[in-house]
Amino acid sequence: MERFAGNFTQQEPIPEEGIAAAVAALRHGRLHRYNVVPGEEAEASLLEQEFAAFTGARYCLAVASGGYAMACALRAVGVVAGDRVLSNGFTLAPVPGAIASLGAEPVFVEVTEDLTIDLDDLAAKAASSGAKVLLLSHMRGHVCDMDRLMAICRRAGVQVVEDCAHTMGAEWRGTPSGRHGVMGCYSTQTYKHINSGEGGLIVSDDAAAMARAVLLSGSYMLYARHAAAPPPEAFEGLKWDTPNISGRMDNLRAAILRPQLPLLADRRARWRERYVAVEAGLEGTPGLRLIPRPDHEAYVGSSFQLLLPGWRPEAVQALLARAAARGVELKWFGAAEPVAFTSRYDSWRYAPAQRLPRTDAVLAGLIDMRLPLTFSVEDCAQIARILRAEVSAVWQAGTV
Ligand SMILES: *Cc1c(COP(=O)(O)O)cnc(C)c1O
Image (cartoon, rainbow, N blue to C red; front, top):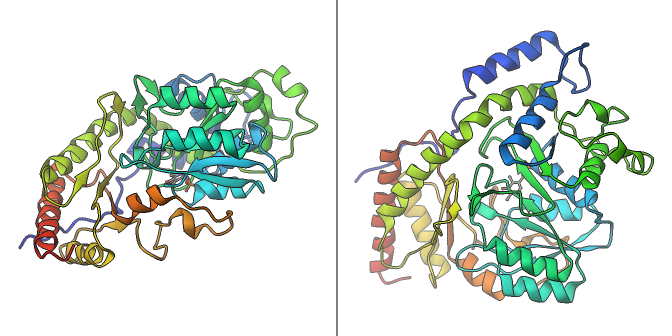
């Protein structure tokens, strides 16, 4: 019986150019983004310019984490304590956490079997909740019909902030992810698409919102040193009234990230090959449902999800154990208790209790797996063979 020997949490090393840039920053010691010598432009500011160009956004701000980016964007678009903020019922903990960090209340929206936000439930809750903002999580890279979503939100007077932690480098009908809403937020944490350990980015075309975000991030009165920020006039009416909630990115992280930006297109292509290898190997397995990927969704396949519709918890647990014994590490969103990075909406008990029956049914059979680029395409085919065999074994045993 074959056993997979790869490590599901091993990312690729930092490119040599990034290592050299990091060492140069360490040698001169000017790690704080506003610590520059005459004529020098900080790595953080250069990264912002380059990421703005990459996404086609007018403005960009680099911050300390993806979670910080979301909280900062919510504040920048006007969310205050006591507000209700719409978000996905299926996402990861930093998303409702960003809402709660402002003293605001998450209102969770159902997820469909395609793992995207349920647009009918969104329309209903946009009308009933009084929320003026949606923090839309493109969870695990699955993107809903963005034209319909934006039309619903426009009609309801709801501003959209996008969580693109899993869609950096992805596009929807040719538009880079993060460019539909008023602000797009990204993470550069180790498990995402570019890696600086921790880090975040915000993009926007909205001068007032971005000026607020820059001030919030802790710019003091040095905002003119941000080459990808709005012009100084945009800060005039805001600089006295916007609190400094320090969460800047430093030059060391920016130096590590800059050489990774030009690699994103190639990474997306390599991730796609790996994703497709797993998908092809699992096609037609009885008892298992694959997630459709629409043609116009240029996704980054950095993780893989599948559904085991109607499976009993004991059967899912048996599959997880059998796969683990053969070296394949799966995560399950249906577990009763949160495990490691995996939790669900009903475990975020700081939010008012909510019932999402359709989401419960999807999460009960939702399996999640990382696909780091250190896996070869052949590794991915092997993972699919093992999974196919073990799903079939549990399915045929009839205990499902
Ligand atoms: C990782 C992640 C974030 C942001 O995470 P940080 O660790 O704060 O950078 C946001 N949303 C989702 C869905 C994530 O997976």
